[in-house]
Length: 87
Image (cartoon, rainbow, N blue to C red; front, side):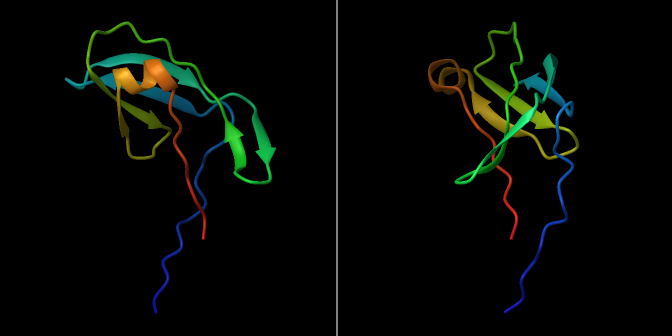
């Protein structure tokens, strides 16, 4: 069985977060805050990106990683998390 290993991701504090609306317009930015280690989840980085847009969906991009699409409803009710795993 072939196993593909992802290279180490450049995720660390101060990495830029870009938020775009469902039309691709940049509507928010932030930076990752200091990370904290959790034995059950690994390193956790938080960020807050104020967004002033009525769009129903947003693309959140951390650094050079592929954007993740989230809904306004989900983010405003529960927040969200983006996880990167290593194997």
